[in-house]
Image (cartoon, rainbow, N blue to C red; front, side, top):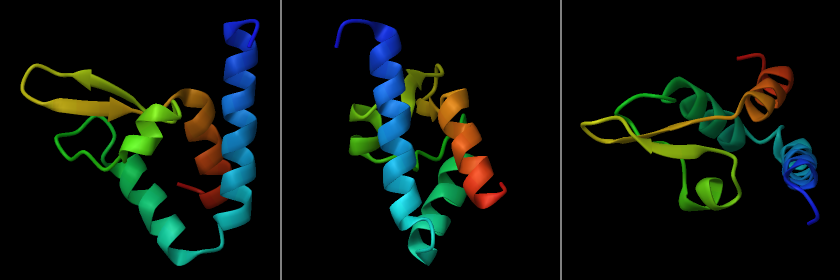
Length: 83
């Protein structure tokens, strides 16, 4: 990687590819619905791999850890699933 822009582009493209190949699976749909619904809440629905791949970012909200989904990733999820 030569720049943060290249890293971001690679993460987004990889996410699109993986999601595209699994989006018809009911368990994938359920996972992303739960992931979006629990964003910025006390419920931590993201997996370690989601954090490691930069699909979500973890933060300490004062009482517990939570996560947020980057806008670019959330937009892809909304386009694919409608939520």
